[in-house]
Image (tube, rainbow, N blue to C red; front, top):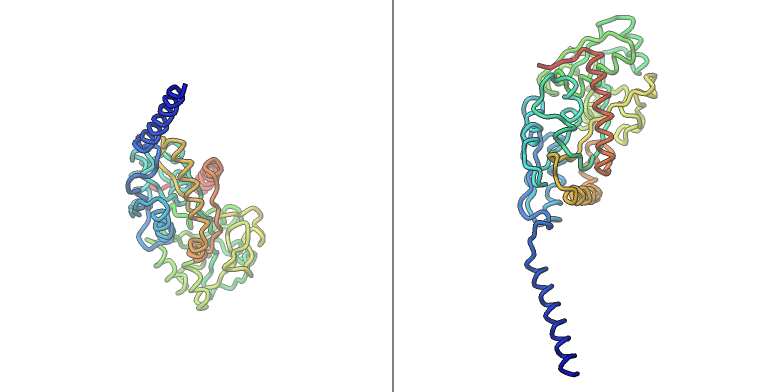
Length: 329
């Protein structure tokens, strides 16, 4: 009897030890990540999108115990980096910094792209959404959006707007303004934002839709004047400035936004972990403090919500591009 009990206990001990050994030496494919993670940013180093990725990368590195390397791949209006990311293995070790211009606007203005947003990418989370600012040169005799619309209707093609290039977010935002206001505006494309701002200050162009970080120091210095912000809600950076929608163009809503995507096909368990960890990092106080400089609002949503948002944005900007006749070869 005692022998049987001891035998049973010996078997139980061996079973427990065996389970512990198997667990300790089990294949580690369920543990993510096990190697460095590459985060492709289709923007120039030092720009808004780049700064967002670099604010998060060190925190993700701490969380995962693996390096998160930001890989800048600018070029072709941001579509180059998107194309590169779309061809990477769907294992979670390549992430993509999604920028509204490249994710939802470019498909409506480029006849051919090296990627399809919905076919080639799995949304992980939207990081933040930031308004833009409708700006005017100081010599323009307007103080409100209503004044601007009245002037543009009284003098068709006299009001010129700049953009960082054909098909850019500023270009499409201005075309949406033109379409909704029923005005005729003259488009002056530039190679980037800096020369556009220079000509806005000097009076070579009359209006410009710019980002909050770039516009803020110029507004504070009195070199240009803001008329309204472009999102549905007022900006925390410009709390006294009305929105375009509140200023007469009901329903006008334009924001630049940033998110995280991965090549389609990443296992669901890894996508779930990526979403949870990204949201955790986005909500860190020190990260949100960095994001505050962009004048945006934290989103940190679920993959399904982000996917639905992208679908709506694709439809919206395709309609704007078609109505404006915007195509970029």
